[in-house]
Length: 565
Image 1 (spheres, rainbow, N blue to C red):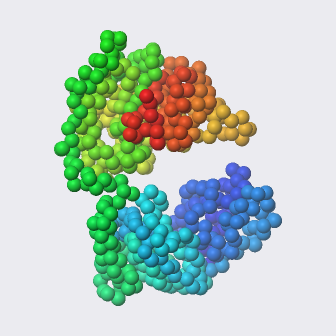
Image 2: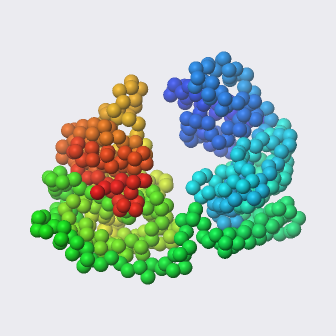
Image 3: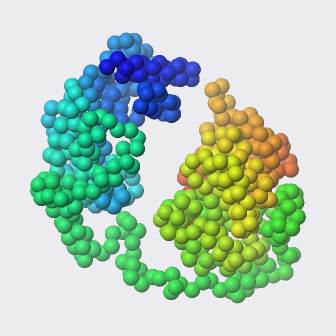
């Protein structure tokens, strides 16, 4: 009706304003939210084609993917017939993403081989995907299997076509979200088109009585004949596969250890043996080690700044207890496992002046501890502090987001940092993935107020050595950002190369220039060895003046966190 058309025109007008202001010249997606009064609110811009592009293609007749390539090749909008006034939406389209997720288990991903894979076809149904019988669904990739897009002249007709497509397909061998999607199609509010972003949350019944599964209330609701027995057949095949082939190596299982390993059976490393190794290594050649935590706790962060700058060797921060297993093991190391190694680690690292800190908290550890490991993250911090009393403990603080995934009130972030420092954390590495200074400001100030040592992070991207006139992330960009961080009270600067983009040449340039500009602030270097340049970049950074580099134990190095030797 007229109101809907007016909302559409307002959204399109603002989307064009945004893209024109950025001089954007290719396909992109501008996202808005619309409330019940027809008012729209800007969310974000994605400079790429979205997975939902098939809906737009069906109602406009425009091949967006092909158009993107033509424009990238130099064609104008007029040359390929893309003139706004000529683009008229016709009918209704809807997309359902078929994923290998089990709605009966909170959408947990499923793996296995597709024993049967036949998709529904017919008028108004588009299929995008490359699934086939015999394909092995692995746990390493996105769970999307195929996309169904239905289109019709009316909303009711679109729902009927999508419902038929979901019921008529025949996918066996893995669990899918099709039963859940069928419940959505049958919900009265969805049929009326009266729903919002809280639709699933407001209707928990969508996950009950799933059609095509054994939880369906009536036999006739259990979907196709194949769907009826998928659960039973799946269990039998899994048991048979275990009996014949053992536990699947693709999931990291070792059949020899599945029933025998218990945390209580593993002996903690002997601190006596660690001391013996250290004594042999020193052989009287090294004096008394520097106790970095004692300096911070007794003399304060500025004294620690000075001590680090005056130290003759390059220091190392060990990330094994946080970023290493977060990146490689989905943060699944338990407190009990860490406690086994804590005393020996404290003994080993406290016996040398060249280990600065242990990164062991913050980042995703908070979320995973509570939601997956069913542990208390505060309990982890305090227990590890008891076992490793001498080492500087370091955490990752997401600016105003603290250790969560949303912006928190100022007093919450301040009190969180205060409690973290009191519970045993010493070093706060504050970062924002977009180098957004407003988000960094709260995190830095809260961490400084706690009494801890604050490392303000510069997230690295692009190529700092590039002289291209359109290079946004040049040397001046990083120097200007670093100056703002120091003005906020940062005690040290951290270069955080999360994507492994740093080259030795780029590292040398960036570190040396930061050293010249900020002679009093220690420089801490962090990279991931994704591209295989991590070790070389760390060595280059140390030669250029970096005070501290990050590393991890050998088993967690060389693929993600840098291996230091």
